[in-house]
Amino acid sequence: IEANNLHARLDEGNQKDEIAHLAQTFNKMLSRLELAFGVQKSFIANASHELRTPLTVITGQIEVVLMKARTNEEYRETLMLVLEEIKNLNTLSNKLLLLAQTTVDKGDLNFMPVRIDDVLWKCQKELLARDMTNSVDVFFGEGIDDDSKMLVSGNEILLKTAIINLMDNACKYSSNHHADVFLDATENRLSIKFRDSGIGISEKELKMIFQPFYRSKNVLSSSGHGIGLSLVEKIISLHNGSVSVVSEPGKGTEFTIQIPVCQ
Image (cartoon, rainbow, N blue to C red; front, side, top):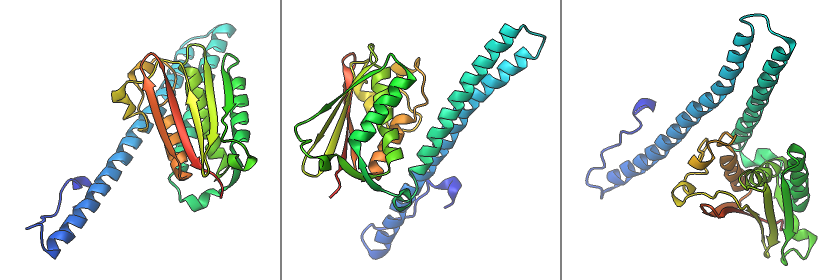
């Protein structure tokens, strides 16, 4: 059994004696390996496609403009288009690097106490700087009765990436570009809800939105690469947290992340 036939399995015999139990253990391991190889193969194929698209557009624009002499305005328009695609490529590359970083050993990430409210304000400021039509309101629940309730052990850069992805999605898919964020805490967990009044997600697609490169059918006309939510889930998982989502088409979506507070 090699990489090209990982679907093969050992004969489990009578499925009762020690040899059968050993074969079953090997087969379970092979199933996990097959799944890992499949995910890797899919990731490489999707990443290659996503990288190829902006590169093809850039190449095509340059080839067309070089076919004959152009006016300064035409050169300027082409350069603007090329610049936009380069920015798109840069964003995609950064997300792919972050996605790769989330697979490293947790001990290599240099976790330290991070104040989540500080991260929220930074994300709000960055999102408004990107697009002034965006608006984000942050609300604090009754459980936030002490500064210590806002401290988590984590990597600030990764947490900021996860939070700004959810904020950005809420603004992007709301007709008024507005997101409501609710911060609350229990004795040992911090909860952050991101609510929008957007197009919503069907129940069938909710099961797939955390897969890398997956994009719901009703958002295909919007810019994006389908990496953000996968990145969010991996980052929160690294922080021993969880991500959940409830949504209804036409009525909006609410994502909730929960992270243990510093003990």
